[in-house]
Length: 134
Image (cartoon, rainbow, N blue to C red; front, side, top):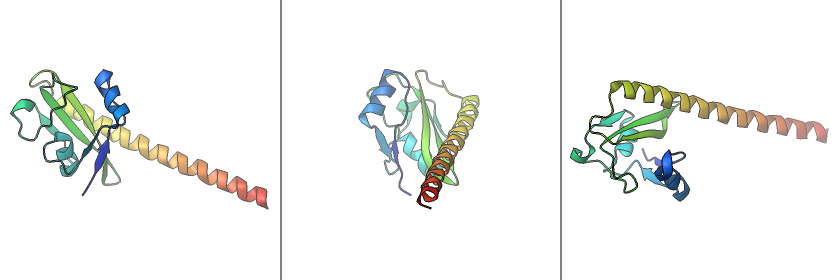
């Protein structure tokens, strides 16, 4: 599997900058919790990132001490990863994981609905054009 994940939304000044700059992480990167979540299709939680061998520090987020990466799965495929960083060691727990998994599922459904809406609009436009030609 090869997934190239582009940041589509981010919070705060660092998140905005990463969106504008086209920040991305490939699932092939070995030192990335986001890539590990994409490859494993499982939530990855590290409560002391500085002790993790596969943590990829972000210079825009120097206060990160804990991180959680949750894959966004649609129709059996990983389409992205929801990544949350915390400025305290042990700052993320199982209740956060449950909430983030729920949010990731909602994002997957919203993206599927947006895709279906786009297809419906396109089909309607094509139908209208065909009617005009007749």
